[in-house]
Length: 195
Image 1 (tube, one colour):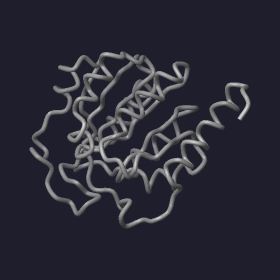
Image 2: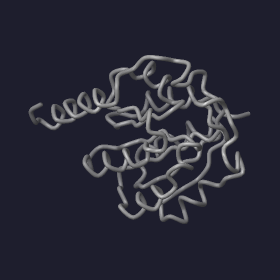
Image 3: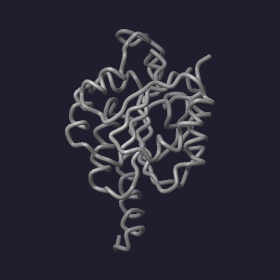
Image 4: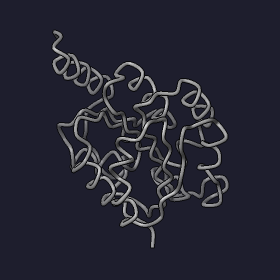
């Protein structure tokens, strides 16, 4: 049985500490509800951008864990980001891939290759320090401390079902530029700087 995205996000919320989280597409509505005031910026509106956005934040904040909540459809649109991330070697980056085999946000059309695409092999081939798949929620909970602390870049392919909501069915949230401004202010405050 596929894992529920919302259960995964709840577990991450409880254990993430001060990590910056980058939800995208179908993880965004649930994350806004689960962690409305955390250090995050949602990557909705530019499909495929979460991995690059996460890399930039990881490089700019080397003392803080950055966790990307990517989708398989999104990553397929920017596969080159795997090589870019691996080449930059951010030790503080965890790249979670919520794999369901469809473009859920736009109507659940099957992605090219569907569930047969092996993103773990792609991440390994690109040069990630570690990459593996998780298919069971109990296994994910056992691995979660390492997922949030292991030297990166780390890639974890999570075999999930569909999210309860998508950005198309759950309106709300802030425009991207407002999210960026809020995150910037909060990071500067945490670092002792001025807004």
